[in-house]
Image 1 (cartoon, rainbow, N blue to C red):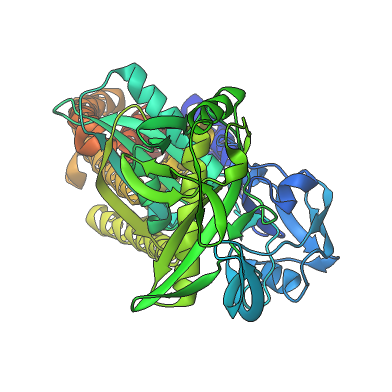
Image 2 (cartoon, helix red, strand yellow):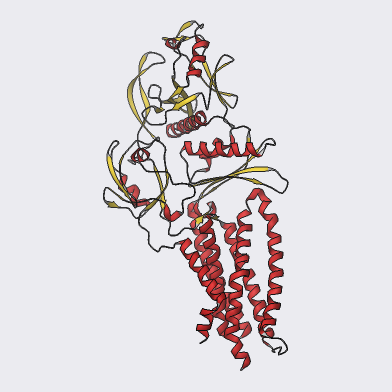
Length: 559
């Protein structure tokens, strides 16, 4: 009879409907095949085959998953890399996802190999023999242009604290308008997408002093890979003398980023430089007609000279990045007075080993390619804080958090049962705490916000607040478990309890509002999660708890 009264009560029905909607939003799955696609590199084999980069608002369970490669099942990240290992470049593989089947061609990585070979040096017009770098794979692994990660089992988005990645906080060096902030955010998003990164969150924030910040969060990215790219204003200019020939952005109509026309320059390769090594990269670009014409006008009156066996113009072309000279290139004599739209850009990288020098050269090349495509930011940015978080550490946080949450629920339940000596009250206590966690996670999945360590702390705060309110309800209805106040009805006791609960609720919400803006917005997730948790508790779970307690204990009191 009591069970029927509980289930049919309007407050319990509201709670059950809310829980059902939250479970649908979370969409928990106990077994998910395959590995999820985090990003599809632009111009890669995967992109050419039709695979799409996941959209920024797509839920985790909606991501495309690779389930087989050449009919070999893929159940985890290791299985994926094992499946593509051992194939030579230019081999076609069949990649099956949960949505479609694609035919991808293996391509060499930008990570390079080295070999002794004889080559012709265009700079000196001589034949040389030595160690050169070439576009090849490392340890037999071929690149399909995909970044993958373990398939998610629900729609809860994990923040960087839990999933791993990079968080960078940027601050403009000078006061800027909100329009400029929006322009910076759009430019940063474009840069990161061009650079080959996805799963990106770029947002603005203010602190309590009113200073503007830009927060960039990139899942699965290396901190050193993006730090300089974000901080630099990215003003690129190519000059002949003091005259600008072209700038990054609108003057550049095409930048080659494929292995066929970019990478380590095979004519130069890598060699020793002082105590370390140096590698030279090169890639092709196309200029707009206007930029090509400026080049023609600035070179038509230059004289030709012979340098190291080649014919070059008397003035070189200087490449400037953020007003710093990064390279100087000789201009071939056949470009004199010619409005050429196809240009070869080169640069270099260094390191203590050939591998490190080659990797540094490729990193510099990719950064320069990105800036040439996207142009410059309207203002210089300072890196205020930069964090790199390991996904392994995040996984450990999740496991520990789940264990602590379980132990906390058990401990709180036992304490309250011992305190009130009524084992039956353990049922509504457990139901209430689990319901509040489900509602918070369901809301997070529905609106698509990232759950991080601050969010988990907020869930604990919300549950702790709920336990306090449950104690208030039990104390008021049972009068501390000592004696019953027969002068007051159950309705009057609950009304007093909820007066205390709402007073506590408004105090807690008021305390969370400053945290919304504090710390450049890093505590916003904590504030939102806490407010959502206590609001759901006050409006849904705690009224339901009071109803269950009343139905379970009212008869006992009357008896």
